[in-house]
Image (cartoon, rainbow, N blue to C red; front, side, top):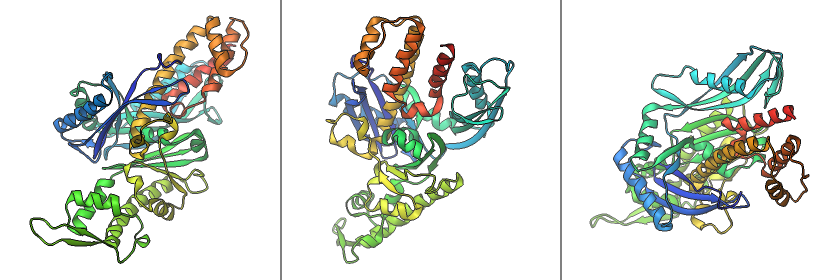
Length: 465
């Protein structure tokens, strides 16, 4: 895909402390080139939920304005938007479908129907389903099947991870976006977006937990053997730590935030007991001496509480150090606290590292975007490209089933550095598709959610061939 064919996709991260808009486009190497970046302080959002729509609109417009200043040639109409907040819940379900004709191979339409049936799952009044994510399938007595299309059997079954959210909270996000003269292309669960930006396929297969520590919430996603096992929204984040410092030390919120960033540590034992911070007094009041040790004790208490929630969720789904060989990846603004990795390893018993979205960006991107606080926004752009690639592949697949033009063969030949026979039959077209797939590899979003459909298509093509 040439750079001219690649669309410009925009991710909009509506957070508690900041709103960020990033516009990106993939180059020939599959890396994201950032064409515009803007951020603004967030108003009207608390704990990940839009409470004041007018204030949120002002913040979104400010972020877009800063993005346009960065690149006046941009035109932003559609955005991929992240969603989080206390209202997000998840549940595991099981679904089965008895086939009408067991003498023929399982078709993609039957799998689609099985997934669609899960949207009728009973959920509490006032909630709505955001995502239905297939985990694994079974056909009769055969378990742990990833792609059931092409199998034969009487019954298809599957396990599903269903994510729900409050209708009013979802409506408020859509209203704020629409009244900012934008269209919501898709709502994406923030922990999934962040995970896609900081995690590799190897991480997914080996088992990993991704913890995105935001301003109002901390979002958790757990993966094992390439499958999303669990998601959770923990109702505490960086803002809670700042409020704890403000109340515990009797300082202004701005002072608390500055002390947290500059002097804060997640492990009090790593700080010096005789170190103090001098805070200037207000309106002629004497200055105040703040113990760095006490500051770190407050931070450690709240971060320990967040990590206790993580350990609880890991235990709930039976994921320990033997299952999660990839450990825990910390991302989001709160992941930059000093000594947080050590505290994480102590509380959870898992290896920990900070996840950066760098591997998806071209090498000359601006330093600001290296920060883990932009993982969600980068992940939203990757989700948009996954949607685009799937639609593009559907068109290509239907086209190559008829014939493979010489021009397409030449492109594939140059890209893969291999020779494609000058045959325009259906068999040759399947070989071309297989080589394209090997070159592209399976991305994050292709391993979860509805993009399994493309893999079902490949199975159908093999049986036809």
